[in-house]
Amino acid sequence: MKIGELAKAAHTQVETIRYYEREGLLPETVRTESNYRVYGDEHVDRLSFIRNCRRLDMTLDEIRILLRFKDSPLENCADVNDLLDEHIGHVAARIKELKALERQLKTLRENCRKSQQASQCGILSELSTASHPDQELTTSKGHVHGAHSLKAKL
Image (cartoon, rainbow, N blue to C red; front, side, top):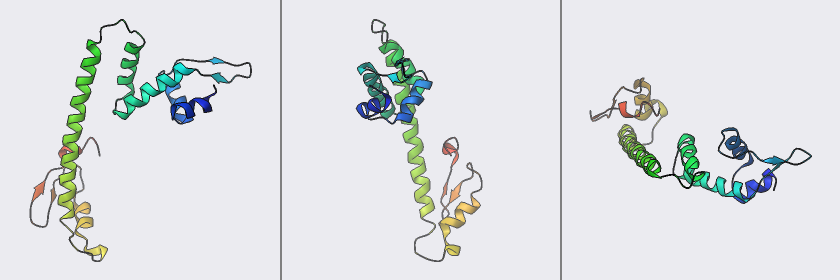
């Protein structure tokens, strides 16, 4: 099958397939006499595996490691378990950061409780004064919330 057919079969965009090829996640394919790449069911299976990993928010490096084990089925999978444990830790940290972000946004929302002219909007005013990601956001009621945990994400 050609790349367009592979894209349909794997529910993946052609550009994404080419990107995964450049990144070495998909094995090289044979080419026809007219220089078209020819893909098989193994490419559909591998793309499905990659898509499932991406759905779990795994990085390309993590996927590379998992693919190495998938390609070496007789290897011990202890490192796969370790990789997943580490990924779970990253997800837990992101959840914590997202909860902090939610609190910050709710605090920011407290600065403007009614519809009014934009020049009087407390949200816009607060966003103008919080000039650094580490600077704390304050509500009109004087509550202080730090923004330091999200600086890497912003």
